[in-house]
Length: 520
Image (cartoon, rainbow, N blue to C red; front, side):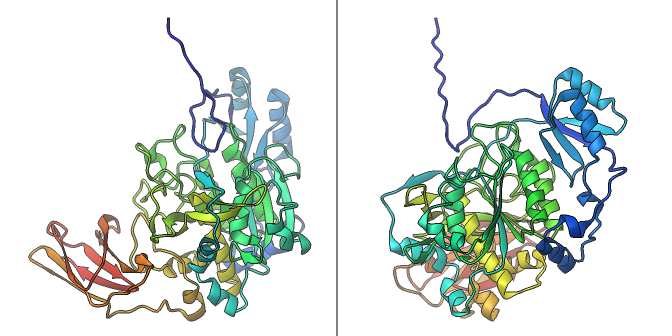
């Protein structure tokens, strides 16, 4: 006789789940008979954002779904569970017989069954006893907080939507008192239960919000302490059927209500998808993220915490979207890739993550503060940075800002699939400079051996300054090989086996200097 023990893990981490195919999207053929007035529907910031990017204010993707179509579907299967204007779809739960009836409706294109999804970019650990002022100062200092402060930049007037699993205590936590006092939480919505209350449930969202705009005992936890917020609850754990649907609806809601930036420390990967499907176009949530970007919003998403897990190391959806700024995590003690942060590239060989920030930070928790780990927190740190950059460059297009943030990276123009372009730097936006030192190294190739000579050592306790990075990039833009060498003294490093990479570009980066060599 066999004994079977079932263990239910109620956490943010992945777990197997049995599911039915009864949930899914009904794709509609048209929006016949609908009308739309953008100036009545959209917040003024949404109109302004569209004007900045030259978008059509009467784009048919913004038109409502035909209410008669929705009514006919509800007559068959009961209440519709979700609606997407952008994709002209409704989300339902239906039996096989009902699905057949729905497919027979003349305005229905087809039924797409919904499968299991998982919450990826989770809080992977926490340590409430490790709080210290130096970590709190460095999580924002590494991005250039002092320079933003000197210029009076704090995200004022920028509206950020945060999509997450709940925001317990945000309505009373002292870390958000300054936001509440100034009434800068403009709207909230719980897409899991269709009401405005979001101040309960999973503390993940509270921690994420603190990394954008929290203040602990007078010390900022994020850079955009004067930003405005839209808070959306999209996640329920365990909930296999609705997270991506909720994400899509929340993005449309954020658009309507004038969000300029969306931060999503969420992701959808294994137990539903295969790695080869992380190609920037397969999943609905990725397509929704790209659509959101086409509406003028800057979409920022955590790369994920799968970097040290066998079978799935790459980023997930929607971080795989080509218009999403995907954020990796680094260790604050070394400023080098933190082990759990997911690696790029995407399945179709595009650069991800784009940039990175601390993956170990001080966050607000339900009852105070704690040290937590995850790319979930690197993402909102960059969202706060982006709000400051947007404040500095009023009227900048979202995708222009996307690329400017990449260029501000501490490693730019070097990049790799662990760090992207590095940590965004305020110096770039304020002075168009990062203080590069072109004399810090030299590099040459002879007889298939790369010799790099470090001309200057930067002593001190900040060891990350003495990392030497190199990569080999082929003609298609894909990195064939990359690595990091720690430098202890002035010396020449030899990197062998360069032969076989003819026609590729080799880049070496050390302390602000990047040398580029064509391998012949």
